[in-house]
Amino acid sequence: MNIFRHRPIGVPALALLIGVAGCSSADDSATVAVPSPDAKTAAQCRALHEVLPRTVDGRKRNDPEPRSAFTAGWGSPAIILRCGITRPPKMIDPEVARGEDPDAIGGGVNGVDWLMEKQDDGTWRFTTAERETYVQVSLPDGMSQQDDGAQVLIDLAAAVKKAIPEGIASMT
Image 1 (tube, helix red, strand yellow):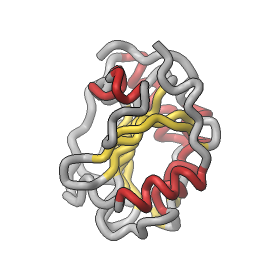
Image 2: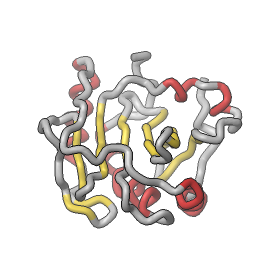
Image 3: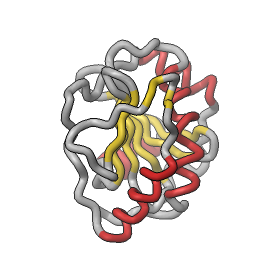
């Protein structure tokens, strides 16, 4: 079931969504859980790691510990990227597909589809959809509420499109 194909969301709409939701931190710690992907996914994550931008939303690269080809970070507190995660449960939630979940929405930014989830603490997490590998981006506290979330996804789109082919990720 393709819940994102016909639900594009433009950058202004994404900025409004993030602004209204009050986006903030998902991971301010110095360490990040490193995913353990299968071989095919690991290769795609390593390819992504090689093409990630040096800056995202004006923040310089600042990778979390432990260092890994499956994680990246920008700024302090850091915007955190994790590659090769397991499928988020909301990715196949029928309420999300119907637009009935107030805490999750599907949409696309610059050719990359994302599941945008509001976390229990009010922060936002974005996970790629319609790609062979799941890539997750978590935003830190202190980012401005309007354009930062959209800018993060814009800044990462080219790298994701280059390294992670369109398709369906494995079920795990």
